[in-house]
Length: 397
Image (cartoon, rainbow, N blue to C red; front, side):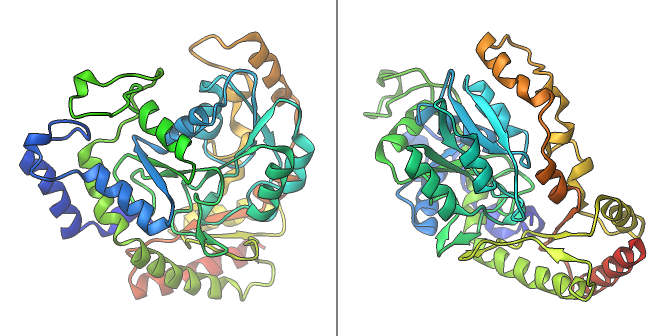
């Protein structure tokens, strides 16, 4: 990870097709295309590869979550349960929809704790959104059972775990809706892009319309198309889709490379008694894009993270002190700093974040180090990295 490490002739060929015909937009201009429809091809490729009925490409992973929330009918006054450990796009998309993000504890999987989810359900709860962080998944059997019991929507965010599976199914295809990110630093990339996956025909139709200003896409004259409802511009371009088309064909190879590289580093760290690896739920197989492990306490993790940097080991993250991915430093969310006025109901509903503590999440994130697994490492790179990591962690004890 990420896929841009191995850009090559396949990506250049798909891009050249688009440049040769000159049509960068995914809709219309039929006569100029010479048969090239990269976005449509990539959507079909996702359906075939992930064995899902529908795939709708959009402009980013954030757009994918926003579209998924909209097509599921989630909006003003609704509550969406989400984890404390995720990317800021999770709560951004929920707030943009007019709904309220309800953050709950994670467990040793580094994803939603099913017990915390159950405890957070209220009459306003509309959806549960597990985020499959750092290459691995939530306990989807437990979460699915909770959603079925309470008649809630299960919305998977698989942005950081493309290529991982659960009980033989691709992540993002198990819930009512699934979201992927295809940005520049993901295992497969479009440069910028995302996808909404679903087996629900109505959700798929809504996603198709909503992501393109509400166009119904009927007939062959874009100017004559009707608009059944309001939508927005979350379209992907043909250039971005072209890159993704080449990358998706290489997904199995990328995962295999990552698994090999991950295994070498993990085996080396396994020799340190104090290192404990994250829990992968039964039936799950990671994408191997990150190696996640716990150290005995917060102080040790901080020392180890600094020691890793000092010896030149890049791509290791201690999210407890990171502004991107953990509730602890999301002050702009806690203070509800927006450029647009929120309803009094939403502002009042978010007040809990000013005083809410998440000791269980702190327990796991405070001790966790998450290390990126690269596709481009040579055999010498892997051996040298493993040796440096072991030395740095041992020195931190």
